[in-house]
Image (cartoon, rainbow over all chains, first blue to last red; front, side, top):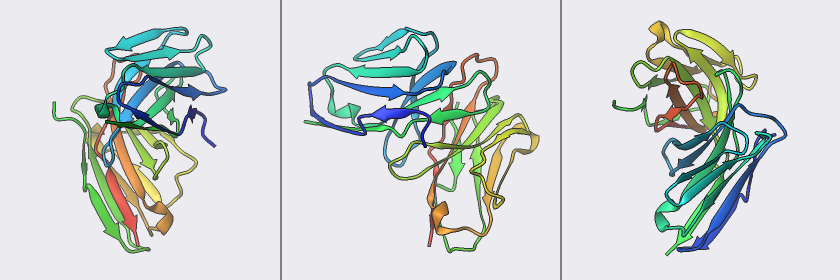
Amino acid sequence: TQLLEQSPQFLSIQEGENLTVYCNSSSVFSSLQWYRQEPGEGPVLLVTVVTGGEVKKLKRLTFQFGDARKDSSLHITAAQTGDTGLYLCAGGGYNFNKFYFGSGTKLNVKP
Amino acid sequence: DTGVSQDPRHKITKRGQNVTFRCDPISEHNRLYWYRQTLGQGPEFLTYFQNEAQLEKSRLLSDRFSAERPKGSFSTLEIQRTEQGDSAMYLCASSPKYRVYNEQFFGPGTRLTVL
């Protein structure tokens, strides 16, 4: 059983479309991170959100942390083929001992 | 800064054999994590080191798995008497000290196939 549930599991869209992926949990996290992973490689950190209600923007990507620090969303504007990959959210507790990952959203952006 | 490196990148072994993987974290990163990832899933936490001390170990980690981090630098993960269910990508990540929120930097992983 995953502590963090991500939805949708798969998403296939045309270049230029917008999309949102979600990361939900019944647990509270001190911080939540989003990663992108290419096939055969390790995840690469995109952002860390730490404050309930926080919104962070990185170019076309907007990340939001829920007020209760239990959920998060990632919104991509005008998707590009280079955005294709597996998007993972990961929640951390108040110590550094363990991180929990969601099962990921596999995004395919078609030209 | 050369990033986290892992060796080997791929390992094929027969059931029952022992295998050992190595992880070299980013220098001066005192926190080191091992994860396992199977196809279609997110990484699953295995164990955590702060310097040379193993502070956390997943209940999923059977007695066949052991990890070490001598001198608080590189780490090794050994799997004894491998089983087909051990086939997965094994990921290592490191994190710097003095960071309030734990940002992990991952290596490229070691893909294990047990025949």
